[in-house]
Amino acid sequence: MNQPVEKSEAQRIKEAKKWATIVYALQALGFLVGISYIAAVIVAYLKLPDARGTWVESHFQWQITTFWYSLLWGILGGLALMWMVGYFILIAAMLWIVYRIAVGWVRLSDGKPAYETT
Image (cartoon, rainbow, N blue to C red; front, side, top):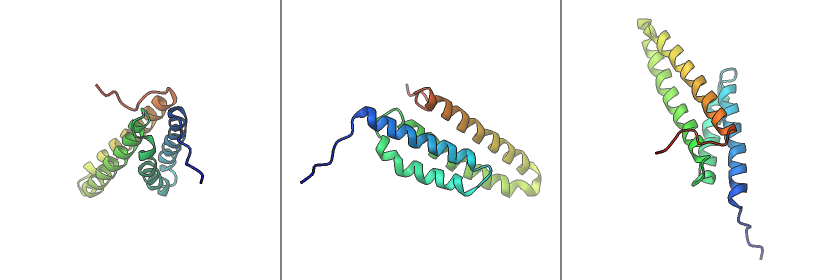
């Protein structure tokens, strides 16, 4: 019988990095095609186990956290629209999402974790 071939650490990182890049692209595309933002978090959850123990794991965590907090702020902003403050919440949330995608993607491209763990 064929034994499954164990991937090397470098192969695992390369594959995880590819998928993290795809997730950032899907998140960015979410501004034009909203459903891709949901697809991004699904892919991030599916690929997170493959990245466990590598520096790329932080990117999947970053992307998942970005999704859930943006959903929270989107709902709160939507509810607050009747008081006009909702527009400010939604604009701030949008800017925060752009920041998270840009910073994460740049750090991924530089071969660094999404955030420093000390």
